[in-house]
Length: 552
Ligand SMILES: Cc1ncc(C[n+]2csc(CCOP(=O)(O)OP(=O)(O)O)c2C)c(N)n1
Ligand SMILES: [Mg+2]
Image 1 (cartoon, rainbow, N blue to C red):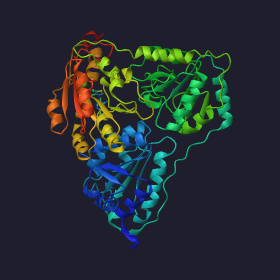
Image 2 (tube, protein in one colour):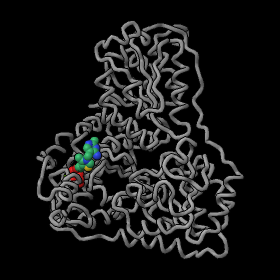
Image 3 (cartoon, helix red, strand yellow):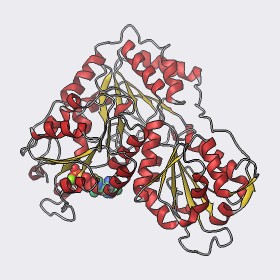
Image 4 (cartoon, protein in one colour):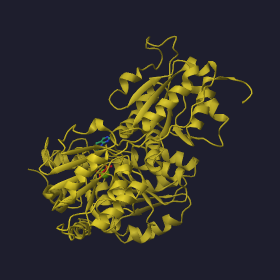
């Protein structure tokens, strides 16, 4: 290396990834990209390839890595079958606006279009959920494509990009054309529009801020929090962006997600000026587009998004600003609320949040809300909590006060199976940090094989499985629509304690509230993570609803 100007495509690609600052890549190998795997051999000290057990789990890990670090996640998978398995994480990255670069093996350029072995047209497959799909058809253009991919993944509304790697190109010898690391370009702020919009906000009687989405930095969060506290303005967060603000910070008004606090929903609806930063206002955050009416919400809407493309897409805005949260929040320092503004509003909104997070009783011997509300006694504030999708997550979101920036990794696209791979990725990024995968029984088993990946890389998190023996969320909807006609929602589970042991992890079963204490205290001492199964009464379908009471 170094002296020989001609290298095979895999080496050129590996070098290009190093220049982009890639330190971890996730994937499952395939014979379609052997030269890339070979190229990585020379960089093992700098770039770790995490060999996963299924591309779905790998794709979530790459997505979670990106969410946590702010750097693009890198995923490597093989042709058709690998690409098909990887789709779930690409969809998550798309809906969550997370930068991701997916490298996929492809059949040789000499046979493309014949439906050769495992051939897929990735431009078609990913057309709905990637920002761009490119095919590197010449070895001497690898650097150019990689540079474009890394720029695009991180620009404007961040998201996934896909690079197909035809097999012959990877084997071809060529000369590299190094390009520098893609720099993150913040879209700047139009100060005249900013002043106009914020003048309206400063004179509002019942203003409200809603922060969310995938483009925040710690600097942006800190700027928003200090301004909100100075001006006593309440700030809510969107579905699964609950960690943008330490939930115990006095400016935190709660999160607008599934099962949102009715008092918060009312507060948002009664706002005369709503400032939305970074959040595209999706179905979950808007309660199915009802909390804010389409196309024109009742209040004055100031909408700030990093890319102009999304502004005005669903909601008619009064003030639309294309700006990164960082540029926008930096400018907030110059904005003072009017003398007439009732500065009690922030404290009232925070009190509403605190009231809503008080434990609620459910049937059975395990009070899940009490257990979740007790988490701050056991976990440091910077603990990362991950989750996938299911009713179990409602307890975590409602009763646990997240500790602030990057203490939550959760899919805004409501994708099951995310929690465990995300927790493993977090442990890989930061082995010293306490990481808890909070899962449902259905949710956990979608990617439970990745516990082997965790074992291999000494990245075992604490896994909490809320076991109700069913796909409870779907059963809840079923019960409401077709009372007592249970169909396809019951589950048969393995013995999770024994399962844990087979991955060298201690396992605990909690069948009474008071058993959680000793389980978590032991789990926190374990160097290999742990699995804590919490058995809850199936009747406790959500923090506030009983299964048998649902239905028309
Ligand atoms: C990949 C994926 N498949 C299916 C669904 C539909 N879905 C949403 S929640 C859910 C059930 C989750 O079950 P579990 O993890 O046991 O949590 P519970 O609702 O019982 O608390 C299902 C099947 C989904 N969101 N994502
Ligand atoms: Mg369940």
